[in-house]
Image 1 (cartoon, each protein chain N blue to C red):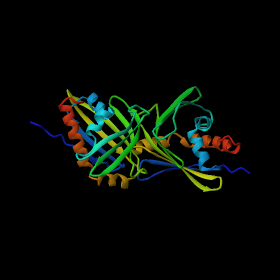
Image 2 (image 1 turned 90 degrees about the horizontal axis):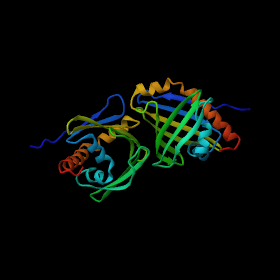
Image 3 (image 1 turned 180 degrees about the vertical axis):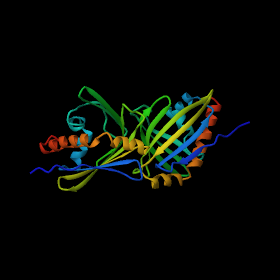
Amino acid sequence: MTTIAETTIEADPTVPVIRITRDFAATPEQLLRAHTDPKLFVQWIGPADTRARIEHWDARSGGSWRYASEGNGEVYAFRGCFHDVGPDRIVQTSTFEGNPEAVALETLRFEALGPGRTRLHTQSLVDSFERRDARLRTGMRTGLNAGYAKLDRMLADGTV
Amino acid sequence: MTTIAETTIEADPTVPVIRITRDFAATPEQLLRAHTDPKLFVQWIGPADTRARIEHWDARSGGSWRYASEGNGEVYAFRGCFHDVGPDRIVQTSTFEGNPEAVALETLRFEALGPGRTRLHTQSLVDSFERRDARLRTGMRTGLNAGYAKLDRMLADGTV
């Protein structure tokens, strides 16, 4: 039996933050690898009908990253810098290059739930509720779910 | 006659943001240099009774920085990554290493006011009002004013 894990997306009522929670059949180390090894990251990030391409990748505190996502004849590029890359936490900036004024500060936490189960907590902070709510209206759930389903399969088949 | 410019510090009522505004007898290019050239930055940053020391400095989009401020037998270290370094805007993360959980997303803008006058707009965003207000209670005004007064002198004597 396969249980598809649910992605929870919450908008904080008091600060312009989105909180995303998702459980994985993985250790924290595996989730860290999936988010920091470019060869792994590129295989799961993004919606189902897109292909990601790493443009720059230096996953350490003080490093930076850029990738492009291609699909349906469109290319979307994202970039940021890594403030912190630690065993249970990544803090990074993130910008969609189509709207470079909007910079998010993202914190990813890997919470061990028990043997082979880890909860990913993602917090995305921007400087206005308008920007936060515009992001929520992009239909982020579909893309997140598709990406995490790809990651589930990579964890199941031993790729990560 | 010397007019000491005023530093305005505002706490946004709706988002956990501090906005700092300060005018300088400088061009935007000079203010950018003062914030990106480590040999200049180290001479003005920090309170009057401290001495700064650059530990790491790579002021370009995707680079990172770290400096320590020494005074009264204490050492305070700060670090972050540069998300964007452009002619009229710097976007960076910033952490006081004594409290690494608290990461701020800082945006500096250099607004040309007229010949040789530029307004520095600094926005500092954190993920809670408690963190923002704790920062305000540190007496940041004294340190900012002292640092900017040093920068005024460096602009007046042609160092920048």
